[in-house]
Amino acid sequence: MSIEERMKSEFSNFDLSGSPIAQELREDFAQEEVLKTAIYPRPKNTRILSVTNQKGGVGKTTTTVNLAAALAKGGLKVLVIDMDPQGNASTALGIPHGEARHPSTFDLIVNKTPLELVVKQNSFFPSLYVAPSTIELASADLALSNDEGKEYILKNALEKYLDQQPERYDYVFIDCPPSMGLQVVNSLIAANEILVTVQAEFYALEGLALLNDTVNTIRFRFNHEISITAVLVTMYDKRTGLSRDVYEEVKNFFGKDTLGTVIPRNVHLAEAPSNMQTVISYDPRSAGALAYREAALELAKRGVRNG
Ligand SMILES: Nc1ncnc2c1ncn2[C@@H]1O[C@H](COP(=O)(O)OP(=O)(O)OP(=O)(O)O)[C@@H](O)[C@H]1O
Ligand SMILES: [Mg+2]
Image (cartoon, rainbow, N blue to C red; front, side, top):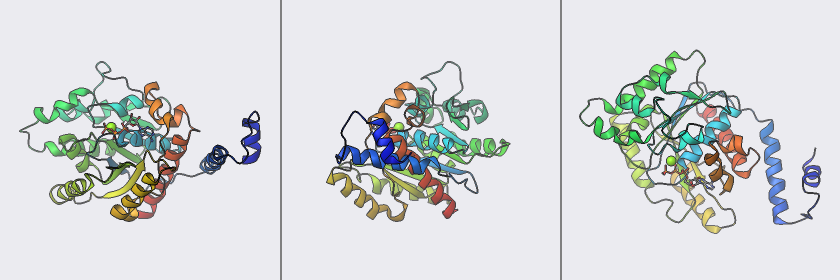
């Protein structure tokens, strides 16, 4: 069915001709058509991305779970490690808060529970897995205050787990809390790439210089491989000049690492977690889902080119 035929069949009761809404719908339908047949290439080696920004509420968790689900929908094998005591990524991936007795990333970090006992399969996408967190993770810093090697716990556990897999993981995403504590340091040492999310708002660039400094310190002291390889602008409103200005500033700051795809402000993205789902299963045709599926495709294609 062509886009115009679909417009007619789905909106026959409305006269949408020439309206801005009709234009947006046409764009969404066209984007959906492209994504339907898109092939998500597998990387040569497992890509491990830490989704990081010490600024709160900039879309880290929304990005982690939806990129992960989009890649899993595209046929790739994906693991999400929730390193945030808030546990929002775990909820969006179907794990209720504080699920009784299931081991979490707190057990992994503090009790050295093997990652294979922590990981659970997502019920919507069979090739998507999650290592959930609980609020206890907030006390890990204190519990390990004098332990030597405490920065490498996640790296060692992840390496061991990945080595045991009969079928290789294509992607690992680590969702970080909005801080620079032990959880984030572990995450930046375990990863080989950093994905930064930036919210399209007035103070967007505040703190990015500090983030760069932290990444440089981690690279120098702990993990020579790590660098920022992808920057995604979220909560973008294409009707405002502010969003466009922020995108341009981000591009000036991060250059070619800035993804061409931006994530619009979209209410379905905020609603999906309360149904314990990603938007990719909750409303796969919403503008938010389409944007994350496109961003995932861009990330996958870039990875293959760079790798
Ligand atoms: N593109 C979007 N459109 C609408 N709402 C969004 C969008 N992205 C994120 N949100 C909402 O904004 C809030 C913050 O997003 P999110 O939790 O992903 O940010 P975060 O960086 O992980 O936050 P924190 O720093 O607390 O971990 C959430 O309520 C989320 O549902
Ligand atoms: Mg978060």
